[in-house]
Structures are given as C-alpha cells and as structure tokens.
Image (cartoon, rainbow, N blue to C red; front, top):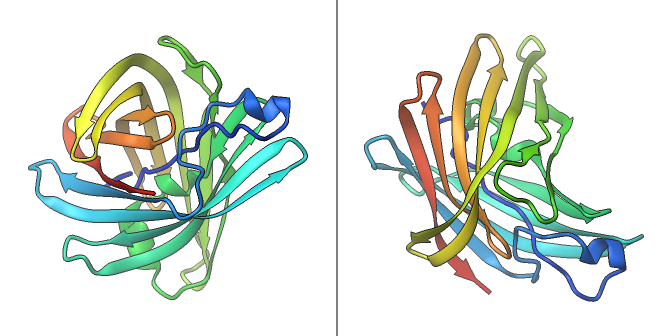
Length: 228
C-alpha cells in the first residue's frame, strides 16, 4: 500500500529578516525557482511515482517568513496525478510545513473531480533539534463533497528525533535529522503505518521510509534532484 510516499518538504534559514525569524532553522530551499524532485519506490524497489516541487513565492511579514511551493505528483508511468500548492513558514523560532504531504496518495487519486476541503494542524520543527527530542503531533482532515460527505483524517504522532546521520542519494550526500513517527488514517477503515524520514537543512526530505503496522517496509522515497 502506498501510504505517505509524498512526503516531501520543509524550509531554510533566511538572513535579511527580523531576529525571531533568524532563530528558525529552515528545511527547504528558500530561493524562488528552486526545483526539487523525489522518486518513490515500492517495497521491492520498483518505481512507484515522482513528486516535483518548485518554490513559486516567498513572503516576509511581521517577523515571519513563508514560502509557497507548487507540488506535482506523477505515477509510475510519469503521468500527472494532481497538482497542489503547499505553504511552509517560520514564525517565532518554529518552522512549520503543510500536513498535505501526509494525505494518502491512493485516496487523492480517487477524489478525481469532486470538490473537497482540507483542514488541519501543521507539523512543527523547532530550531536546534537534537537526538531524543519529541516533536508535536500533526493532523489533517479531508472532506469530499458528493461522496456521501466522505471524511478522512490523518494523524502523524509519536514523532521523535532518533539521530543525526549522513545520507547519500542520487542528489548528493547530506547531514540529516532522522525523525520517526506513526501515522493513523481514519476513513472507511482505519489504516496504521510507521515512517522514518531523514531531513536536511536547506534541503528538506532526503529519504523517507514507510512501514506497515507490523514494521515491514512498504515503500520508500529518495531525493534525486535539486535545481536552483
């Protein structure tokens, strides 16, 4: 099952901003026009799709810095599934990014042309994380109109910084925070999974791994390209 393949994304440190914003550590490139690509694989290392993200806007207001990212999701045949905009922000020393990344890929594909609304509590990454830190939970709710008001709620919890490790992919070698977490998706049936992501300053997600509730690998994603 392809759960949480489309993880993707965080933000970086900006210099010419007020003091509180400078205290943030960003986990995504801030330069407008930067493009990042993540390749997704199933448990047998067979290509399962690609996510292409581009920084399309950057705003500084009231001591906060935010960027808007256009994310396009492609299937294993390189056919476009959907495009969505994500927002990442640094405010008062806390970096946040949209929980949209944790929506189930198969569910999004099934939405088709139906109208839907998204609400949630975004994930937070404080400055100066270290091994052993416990991070705040995140939650996102997807309501689909025209399908008997179908609802899906995804919660990312038990988030913990496990270690600081170097990870090498096609895009290079990066020093990363290794963060583990559990995912609960409540729709017509409950789906539980686990995940590990390696995130780097100025880059974001370098590698992610997803596991079923029994701890068996179900898929993984790797950073394959950064273009500035």
